[in-house]
Length: 168
Image (cartoon, rainbow, N blue to C red; front, side, top):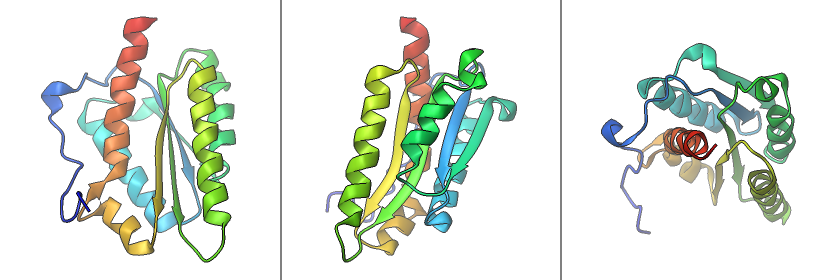
């Protein structure tokens, strides 16, 4: 594995636009909440570290990862979006392989759903969904030895919000 024993969540703030004027929506799955809360914390901390204002970060929870698409779709059409208050949305979830095909259906569904929102919508939706083979891999990627994918999602959201601003 190319990422074995590497923390991939380090970033250089000099290469990232200041987030002070951007507004972010974050939709968090309650399923596998010890993992998703770690991802949320990584996301929030990175946004704040890059200049975001706490009041410009809106969090909604949904029951599971499959519901992230609906939550992001509703958020993109909410009063926050209508008033120009959202520059990017981040969806946070975790699906861990089990013994059935449920894993495949959930992963495919949420991936396609988020892709569709990005193609049809005006607000970038950032995919921060872990799809791991076991719980330890999820722990390692939500603040463990491989860093925090939430941090990486926050940096992506800032860059996409900046791209949206530049191309509007």
